[in-house]
Length: 277
Length: 341
Ligand SMILES: Cc1cc2nc3c(=O)[nH]c(=O)nc-3n(C[C@H](O)[C@H](O)[C@H](O)COP(=O)(O)OP(=O)(O)OC[C@H]3O[C@@H](n4cnc5c(N)ncnc54)[C@H](O)[C@@H]3O)c2cc1C
Ligand code: SF4
Ligand code: SF4
Ligand code: FES
Image 1: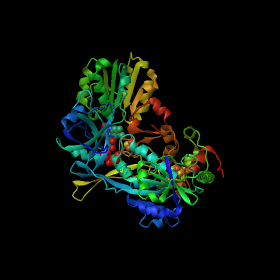
Image 2: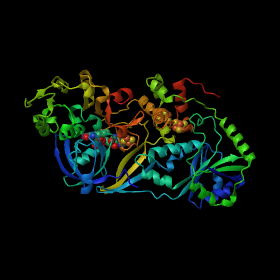
Image 3: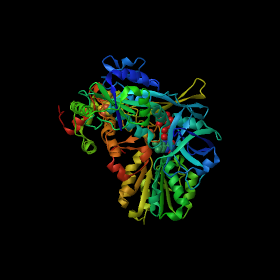
Image 4: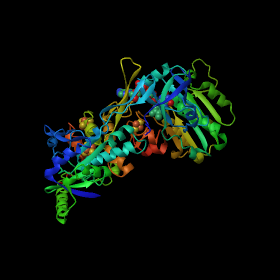
């Protein structure tokens, strides 16, 4: 019998700092066949184990359209993450998954898409962003709006700057404040960027948001103003998780488990299930 | 299902025979309460026992156990050596409790720790006469049709013994001479009369129709805050409830620091840290929110998913909560029902 709790050995292939406390990690199953056959969906997460420190859930930041590698974008906040930050390239870590529902790609294909990211929300939504770009012809119009507090705190700066140059999507980047005057684009809240969103077919649009809790309310209000139906407004939620597979109970919200039935929920879910946000 | 008859006087002899299958465990008296204990002497078994303090879940999900041993960053599975054992004396509500844990632990992503313990354990049920805290009839868990290997039912000077599995059939064969196949029409009458008498003994009776809807519509009821004012957040209700399954995981390193064990231990959603995440955000800071989650799980969540409540009516929360918060109080509060005597 397979043990769903057993962490799989993966090699930490590459790591570098995205900001002062957020680091990018590239990992690969030690077994190459496994590395190439690993399937996942944008929006899913993995449980990462560091012996002695414990285990914690992290969104997959890479896209399944580029197989062989898993990428994470992780903020150092406590036991597990501090231990992970100590690990050097080429060391082994424990990883299991993928878990969670992920984004409903089957429904999003063929539709217009609008992605709004704030801060660490880039971790799960980079997966969706890259997936759409890699399968660009399968999707309709595409907007990517990104907000960071300051230029220094922006994640994936180089990558997103390059994406902004592409002509097959509308990518807009902003920072809340730019004290040193070094930021080349808009300065202000991410909601300001909605003024650049035009000619979306709202009935035919999926709008996805992930970011700091305070951001949701305002961004969702903008989505609704555009006329996007509530069940096509998507977000990923966070809860404490000790198993990822519906056993430990920690991520329960009313009748559902965030780890099995989420972490991707629609705004309609949020409205009709008490306690979700 | 096949049924046999066993003379009451032969019960102890048969219990002794069961030991050739494995360790024999059953309820024994501890002060005024009961606990499951190893029956070294079969005459220690408390045949009239009602609920044990801790439900049988501890045999399948021990309060604390090792999942893995790690050395550097390599995790290796670690399974406790579970010897074959017979758990004697489970009442219908506890068997239902076990069936609910089976759904949680054996369906999606089967849990090998649970499965190994479950596979090593024979379940032998025993009929009971409810007291004023039992409410299994309201939760429809007062009788069993499965979930046991053998089930002993009072039948005058005999026991009617239901065989519920092929293992149960093997267990009977450990001392086949004690059993008789001759179930007379008279026995059937005695059995039915006993069932009627027994079912009429439930003093707590609630109509749980529409409970998920009632929970939903009572989400903002002041009752939750009133209960929360009293609740001590001690978590005892979770420890004693046969269908509470929440746990925590932690790595405990040896002194050398590069090896250690990953342990799993019981947790309760009543604990303040239950929904605390890194960075200090607590999704259920308020005690009322945690109470709501507990009772949502018992009276709503499971009905929505499996069509039945996850409360099996064992009465342990009624027996245990130091400030008398329990499923009966909550149902009364939610429905305005009077207790029907
Ligand atoms: C679906 C999902 C996706 C996520 N994706 C990302 C991501 O992409 N990037 C990212 O940076 N973060 C992500 N997070 C958040 C991330 O899981 C947390 O930051 C991480 O758990 C922190 O772990 P830590 O051990 O470093 O922090 P700590 O605060 O030290 O510990 C948090 C963990 O330790 C345990 N713990 C904490 N307090 C207690 C206590 N009082 N008693 C017992 N145990 C305790 C729990 O296991 C808890 O999960 C995600 C979370 C979820 C649910
Ligand atoms: S309801 Fe009662 S038993 Fe449960 S945590 Fe509160 S005080 Fe303790
Ligand atoms: S809620 Fe109370 S009565 Fe119901 S199963 Fe749990 S402990 Fe028993
Ligand atoms: S993380 Fe354990 S139940 Fe969801």
